[in-house]
Amino acid sequence: MPHPHRSYDDEGDGLAVILLHGYPFNRSMWREQIDFLSARGYRVVAPDLFEMSDKLQLVAGSVERETEGQRQAEACRTVLTMASMAHAVAASMDELNIDRVIICGLSMGAYVAFEFVHLFANRIHALVLAGARTQGPDEDEKQSREQQARRILTEGMAFVADAMLPNLLAPRTLAEKPDVVSRVREMILRTDARGAAAAQRGMAARRDYSNDLADIDAPTLIIAGREDTIRKPEDAEYIQCGITNSRLESIDDAGHLMNLEQPEIFNRVLLGFIREAEPHRRIFIHTLL
Ligand code: MLT
Image (cartoon, rainbow, N blue to C red; front, side):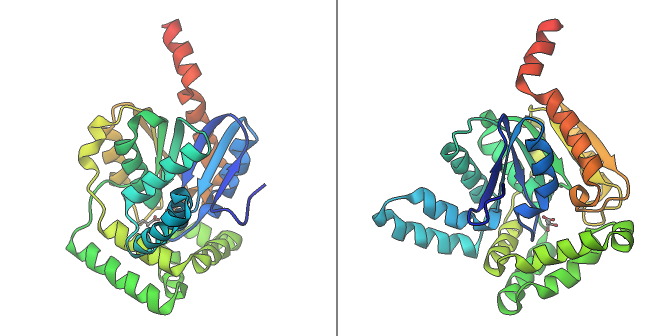
């Protein structure tokens, strides 16, 4: 069952899969994947990345450190860097007694996944990157993210929902799946404005991950929505060319939020990859060869 008072879901037993959400969403975007994978023998953990500052506080522990933790939390709300979220994910894994995982990030979650692989390469079995890109921000992008962060802090999330919705979803989703459209809108409106602003600033400060690709040796699945206007097909192809042990799957009638728009296809592709990438299978196949 989901835990409404915790900043992450942790469901099922078995090999752990961590799902990292995009901006400006929360862990609820993974509901279909959590249900699907946890019913098929996997332990699925989905954190709310914008609440990671609270997580740092929690990890800090003692009363004396709590004050420091609170200060840290405040700072993280100002700029929530991709690396700090990756560190918080690793800290959560320690707490949950998870040594190694399959890590799956969508969009902003994929930036965090890149940082995670860079920082903790020996803690992953396999990597899934959906709606991802590697390029760092140029000056225009930095400025527009800073403007959006300031506006969010004064106006809240409503204008973000209005501006982003038409670009997040494929035309067919917008026309034929009103439940998905309203779910995405609600999810954006429920997102904590301070966390979203801090994440915008964190994305403005992110690294360019292009040079990391050659170092990634974990089996990697790249998933793209064919109608994604936020990430172009070239972004996914570039990543696929750069990671040796990788493959690319593109999903029809799906935009940037492909896992919500085409959950059955996304789940099938994800499960197929995870089964192939499971460590015991890889050892088994290796022994046969
Ligand atoms: C996301 O979906 O996480 C965002 O589109 C990421 C971004 O703004 O680069």
